[in-house]
Each structure stands twice: as C-alpha cells, then as structure tokens.
Length: 445
Image (cartoon, rainbow, N blue to C red; front, top):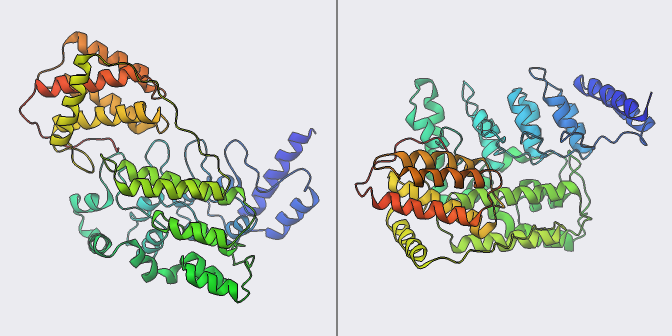
C-alpha cells in the first residue's frame, strides 16, 4: 500500500468514526498516525466538515461537530462550489450542527457560486417558524437585504408571496426590519446576546465578543488570561473574530491590538469573510459614499494586523477617447444622475441600461475586473436583450455588443469594450425617450 493509499484509508476510518460520534477512536487514529494525517488538512477544497456533512440526510452527531471545531478545522472554508460547512449542515437540516457552526463563526450569508443556496434563507423556510433559530442567524450576521436568483430580498419575498401558514414569519420579519432601520444592528446584538452565551467562556471572552474595548482593557489590567479557552477551544481574540460584523471593525482592530496572539489561518479566514461582506454591502449602492472609504481603511488595517496580503488593484491602461466618445461619457453621467437611484435597480428600462453599463465599466476600468463574478456575466447576458427591445440598436451595433460581451465575459478584462457598451447604452436610451417600466428581473447585483 502506498503512503497516499494509506492516508485515504485513514481519513475514511476517521469519517466513519465521526459519523457515529466515536471521538475516542478518532483521537486514537490521529495520535497513532500523526506523521501521516492532519485533521485540519484541506483535500480538493474540502476539509473534514465538508466530508462528514455532505452526505445528508444522515445527521452527524453534535459532539463530532464540536470536536472538529475544537481541533481547529476551518468552519468558514468554501469548497469548489462555494459551499461552506454551514451550507451543507443546513441542507441536511442538522440543526444542532447549524447552531454550533454559527457560534463558531459560520457564514450565514454564504451563497454558493450558482446563487441557489444560502443558509439563512433556508432557515426561514421551516414550518412551523423556528424563531430562536432565525434570531441566532440574525445575531450572527444574517443579512435580510441579500437578493438571490429571483431578485427579491427576504422582506420583499415574504410580503409578495402571502401564505397564511407564514403569518408568524411575516410579522416577525416586518417588525425586525422596522426596528433594524430605527435602532441599528447593535441593538439586536445586545438584545439577543443570550443566544451566544457559553458556560465555559471567561469575562474576557464576553467583553471581546461584545466589542467592549474599555472592559477588555480593564480585565487585562486585572490580569485576565488572553489564552483562556471556551467550549469551542476559542480564545477571546478568536471569539471576537468569529462574531465580528462590518459595524464592529473599529473595535475589532483595537481589541486585536490588545490581544497579541500569533496569527492563524482560521483568524485570516474571518478577516477575508469581512472583506466579502464589505464588497457585498458596497455592491448594493450605485454611487460610492464616505462610509465606503472608512470600511476600506479599517479592512486594510485588519489585513495588516493579521498578515493578509491585499491584492493590489490592477493598473488599467485607459484608451484615449475621441471627442465624440468624451461627449458620450458626459451624456452617460447626465443620464445616470437622472435615471439611476442611490441603491438597487432602476425603476425604468432606460435607467437600468445606464446602471448596468455604468457598473460594468466601473468594475473593468477602475477595478481591473477584480470582483468579476456571475452577477456581471448576468449583466452581459441581459444587456444584449435590452438593446434589442423597443427601438433596437442597428444590426451592426448589436454585432458590436456581442463582440464586447464575448470579450468581457470570462474575466472582466477589455477596457475598450467596456467603453463601447457604455456608449451604446447612451445611444439606445436617447433613441427611446419614452420611459419603460423595468418590471421583474432575474439578476442580483
């Protein structure tokens, strides 16, 4: 038997032990073969969480999930399909695993690459309504504003599809939405903090996960142990990272400097998750604002603190524009100001054409395609259809659009092509002056 075959056999034995909650035998295998297998190892984008949670409807015992968390297996790792351990636990309806993974910092908003699966939205679909489970998701950062493939966020979905059996859910979320707008997220962090309590956490754990900087300083002054462990084997710093939301980044930075631990891969994973949330939040808006700059600055500082190399923005060489093209640029900006809202999709087809061509151009010309994703490819797919509507672009112009979308589709690279789409958007809007309601659309960005 080769070493690789032996490794595969050992990992299979470990899986079988974890499937039935035999922690003692798992520990024995790992101890006897510590030079051959590592429980934290990632194999083909999967770690041990993915391995034991993917075979639903089998429900892995709670103690196996807790064991893997305590051993330092990454609870937020994405596999080749963009699925995290929490996605798989939610698919299996393994609620004990779901609760543990959330408390360990699992991402409630992790959407797989096909945009069909998000743990939080799955949690809202249970009948009868699981209020405590939903509260746990919300206090762990679940986002009611994310839009999936049907282009509706949660509030729109539950109010547009009136189901008598979901009255309790509808009343809960409409009340939550109203209070969230009035009081902010930190109000709920405090209100539902009891859901995160851990019988083994120290006062320093509690102060850190509540981002009480002054309290952390006071406890440290009185000799608090920065390496104390809770039931998940988390230190106070790790606990804070697992709980950190965008609104906590300032305090997180201060706390991380007060608790000088050696940086781990799991800590870095939580920081990268903040980066994903930051970009998702920014994508909701059509125009940048001062808040974006603050978030970006805090994120950069956290990356420096946790030794994460930030990918430099690609330097994009912009083509020189002709006088006519410069005029079209000015006209696009004018139409943007008239037709594009601050946040979300436009109300009219004309506004949406300007918004889509503008967002594509911004990503390509300013970011070098760094955030290029399925959402932008959806834009390329629908923009051609929009250009065919009403008084269509000419056949020559439509052929040019096809050429541009083909060039941009793979990686969001093609400066000239981004400009062409933007300028043809202006041409189409100007030759269709009568505003057309946008209607229902099936893309997210």
